[in-house]
Structure formats: C-alpha cells, structure tokens
Amino acid sequence: MYVPGVTKPSAQRLYRRKGGGGKGGAKSGSSGRSGSSGTSGNSGSSNSKGSDGVSGSTGSSVGSRGSTVSVSGATNGRTTAVAYGSGTTKVVTIPQGQPFAGRTSGGATRDAVYGNSYYGSGYPGTTGLGVANRGFPFVFWPLVWGGGFGYGAAYLHDDREYGEPTNTTRPGGPMAQAAFSSNSSTTTPPSTFHIVADNTTVASLIASVRANCTVASNSSTAPSPFTASATDPLPEQAVQYFRASSVALTLDGYNNTAALAGNDSGAAPAPLPAGVDTALLACLNATIGEAVPLFADAAAGLRLPMPSMGLVGLVYVIWTVTSFF
Image 1 (cartoon, helix red, strand yellow):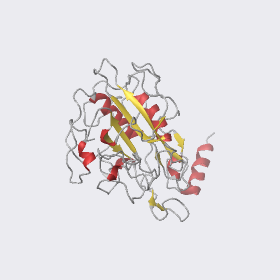
Image 2 (tube, helix red, strand yellow; image 1 turned 90 degrees about the horizontal axis):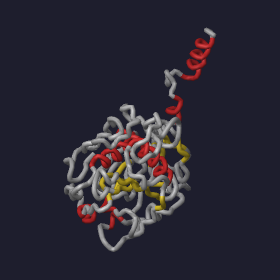
Image 3 (spheres, helix red, strand yellow; image 1 turned 120 degrees about the vertical axis):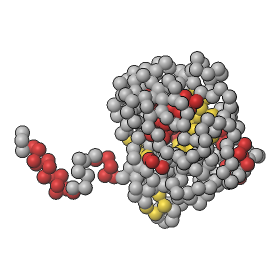
C-alpha cells in the first residue's frame, strides 16, 4: 500500500497479514487482536476479544473467511459475493436493457484489488484519474462523491453517470460508511478512519475489521448512510481506494490537495497529518484488501479436490470412498 507521508509510491500488491495488524506499508505495531492465528486472512475465529471488548468473528458469520453476502442491484445475474474470496475471471458483456449495456463486467481477482490514493485507481490494467465510461472488473460500481461541493476537480464529483449515493440500483445497495477510531491510549487525539462503499460491503467489512483490528469502543457496529453531505467523508480525505474505486478508506483531518487539483501527472499526495495511528491504518488497509467481498466464479464455491475432473469423475470418487464403509 502507498501511505502518504509513510511509504514511497510503488506498484500496489496484496500483503499478507501477520497476526491482526497486517502489513500495508506501515509498521503494524500491536493493532491486531490477540485471537488471530497469524495465517493470512484469518479472521480471528477463536472468538477472543480486543481491548474494545468486541468479540471476534466466528464460524461462517458475516465478514469471516468464506462467508457469503447477498448482493442486490444491477449485478448481471450474480447474487452473492464472498468475503476473502478470490474474485471472478469470467467477463461478460452487459446486455441491452440493463444499466451500462455494452460495457464489461467481471474478470478481476483479489491480487488486483488495491488501488492508490487517487479516485479512479484500482482498475486492473487501467490508469488515470476518474471513473467515467469504464467497465466493472469487480462487478461493483465505483463509489460517487456526489455533485460538486463548489471546489475541486470535476472528475471527483460527477454523479450523473452512476447516480446519487442513494441509488438503489447500485450493486450492494445505496452507499454507506463506517467509522473506526484508535484507542485514546494509542494516539492523542485518536485517529478516525472511514470506510466508504455500498451498504453490503460496508456491513461485511465492519465484521472483518472488528475481528482483525483493535478499535475504540465507539467505532461503528453497523453501516451509516453516505449521502455526500458536507459532514460525510470527503474525497480529499481518501488515503486508499480498493476494488476499482468502489471502496475508499478515508482519514479525518487529511487534506490531499493534489487530489482536489485533478493533476494526472502522478504528483505525490500530501503527507499524512502528524500523529496518525499508522498501526491501525495498516490493519485497516490489510483487512480491506484481504476481506472485501468479491464475486466468485460459480464453481469456485464447490472447493472440490479435483475441480476439473467433471461429473463422471466426481461420481466415481464418491462411489470409491463410500464403498469402504
């Protein structure tokens, strides 16, 4: 991950998470929960509690490894996404009569989920600012910052193409947000981050974050609406985009003037404010990258020992195994 003021710009990659803290370009410190087993993507299934007193995610609960979430909206027939899932390699052309007919949907996997701190990043094989006229490699639509606030480049605020944040046709439902603050003992004042995405994604990530990261007790337990009001997270506060700019991680008090300028020359973002809880930032970054729900190919959920053996081979294996009992 590129963290402004902490790391140098580089190609995005998916980092393994050690314990609960993750590794996203900043030192993870002790931000992870004690219940993490230390394996990549483990959601803390031992049900231990961090200092915020919130139990970790267990079993197949929402946000845990392999849990599925129902996704409404214009998804072109796909109805479920998978937390920690690998993504889909199937590309379809959106048919006539559906929103964005003629564009492509699907084809992106988790190793391409990271963008950077500029709106329009996170599209595999595509660079440049903004999201206009693009396909949907992860099926989900890019988030929108709403109509213009009277400042900043136009590419940040064009809501005509993808509708208002309250658009119910959006895959995963209307846009939502969740706030996560560090413990006051960690930083003073505490750092507060927001996840902005569709409602379904935010709900799943709340569970994943609480299973993996130590957050203050007043952090979100359920999604809140995002309406692009002046009190909601702002585009210049974004420190990282994910999943074809359909998810953003923002930091209260951050002001990336480079994003507001709309400069496509690759100028470095503004540094983070002093005293930011970089351990929590790293944990949030790693958790979103590993756990954000992705649509999967239909066969991916079967997890067969020989996924390409075909129906006849499967019947033979079942018959062979059962013949010993």
